[in-house]
Image 1 (cartoon, rainbow, N blue to C red):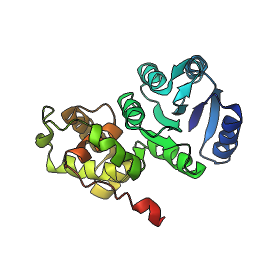
Image 2: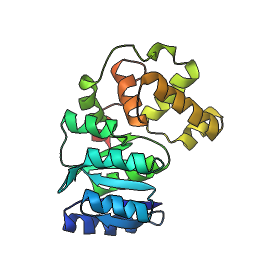
Image 3: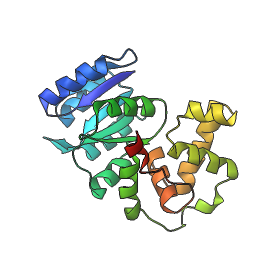
Length: 218
């Protein structure tokens, strides 16, 4: 997969290039230190995954993510930041990010997040998801109770971090069918991404939340 890195901390970016580029399935196709550079790089060589720092000299990560989603709807976005407040996480989700990784986590977690979102999954640590839940809407205006039993199954597997392919294998259905279920889930929950759908569904009790203690057991 081609990965575009967007971060204004040059030494940190160089480290990420070495780490990500050390994996056979990942190619760092571009490095940008500003939002303008990121948009220019993406237009020249459309990436599969974009890793975006929230704080940029000429913009913020959420604004850039939204612009990238408009220009490259097929790209998967991962927000990488030192911030962990609800507002930042909520902005990243609303902008269409499928992954959220804080800079205090091990670099290996970023690698796995990149792989997860590229495979069509959503990636956010249970602790961050728990922090996000209180700020989400709880009304039923989006028809949340109209989810079918199969859609609920797919939704539960999404919160467990499974990709579309893995869900298809577990439920013995095609990838195309999974994609259709996911799209209907997003529509019914009024969500813009898998990550937002997972967060909304967990908040209103449609699915079992991930266990925040799981990280401490790893």
